[in-house]
Image (tube, rainbow, N blue to C red; front, side, top):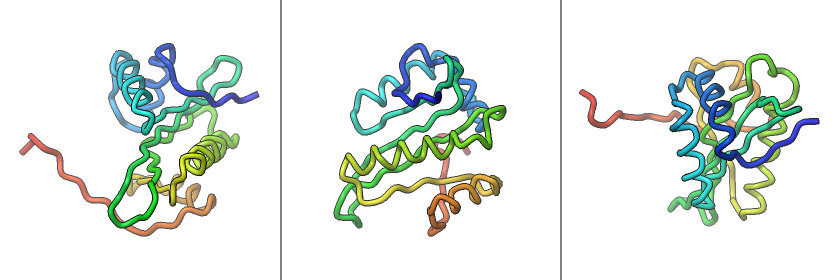
Length: 144
């Protein structure tokens, strides 16, 4: 049975490994500290999916207010399923968990971003009812 629960300090290695599958180099130390700091805000929960003590995936959320919306917005800031656990419905379970969390928090909508080269992820999100409505731009600071 798959269990989805808030991440804890004991999830650091799993969080680090899962984030590396997305291309983010996050040390186990940072993977222990950052989710705990974020979970403490009450606005930034991170949840981990487990089956028989084996980490399968994670989803990180951020609830925020935006001037253009009446109610809060929930942003999915990270979603990853271990490469050996894909196509088993774990991503859908994590998204469903996030949608319930957002509804309980009184959010108006849920949004996410996805790298342009992740066509499979885009198809997955569309299949779940998400619509593409913008392009994200970014600029790294302190790097020239």
